[in-house]
Image 1 (tube, rainbow, N blue to C red):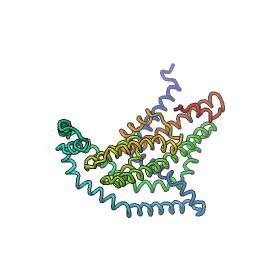
Image 2: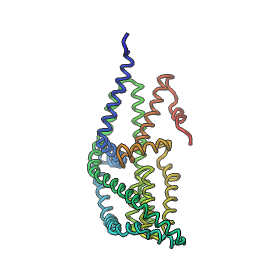
Image 3: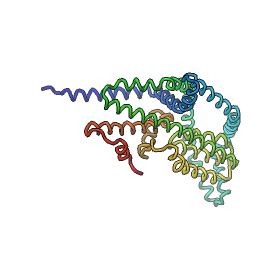
Image 4: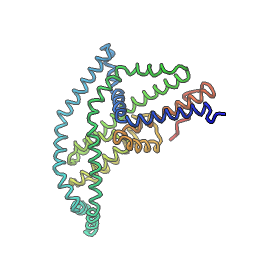
Length: 362
């Protein structure tokens, strides 16, 4: 009698293949991330390319026209808005030594305490506490600077991603057909086709929703901060809009950054700014985002938090951004696999009722 039968051998071989595949994906994660962002960019511009294709009768020409329009729009943005953002960033950089000195000396606490009517004893205690923990604050600032430097090192993606996206835009449908051609049985082909269709719908909606939310946040931040005459309003509003792309963590960082800069710059109405940021977060999370995202991105909060933390450990800031669509993709594959398994056991079933039942109610 053999020690290991054929069924056990197949299982061990399958586990080994998956382990090797995951090891390869982890080793090539930087390249994989570039391709994933290219796919996201392709989903973003695909509706515009498809519309232009209707009258140009050539998908290649439609892609070229849309790319040209994107370059023109970005050029106009940086021509009219870029110099002002750069000027505010330069002013903030030049004033950083003075702002750090206010923190180290505890003067910022004294100023805020006088403004809000704190007693001298309370102001002195807070100043001493701040001076004793200056090293911790500087350490956090250094870590933030390292993260920013890591993101800056990935700037080459800004050139590579549109190039890769052009190939996905031109031959994306052919890629799907080639993938389906590897499957020969009808149930497996239905499973794979369902996964591809769901992923297409989810990714397209996610990318456009993220861009819409980021644009709304940029307008809201810049308008309110400018109206309230907060120092570096346009720069802070732009950073807040960009951070909106990073799920969960990005909005929190934007709130801390905007409030912190307002405090350090001696802005007197920082409490009003903080209340606005909290109110805008509630509006985004509970009113705007559910309407824009729809139900395709429904994830349990624990799954979303796990995805964000794991993505940050694997690929840093880029991994944090990709965490939500990756977790949503895994959810889609799991739901479709359950459907496939149920059909094999009990035969055809009502897909809509099955998916409805498998979705947790809020």
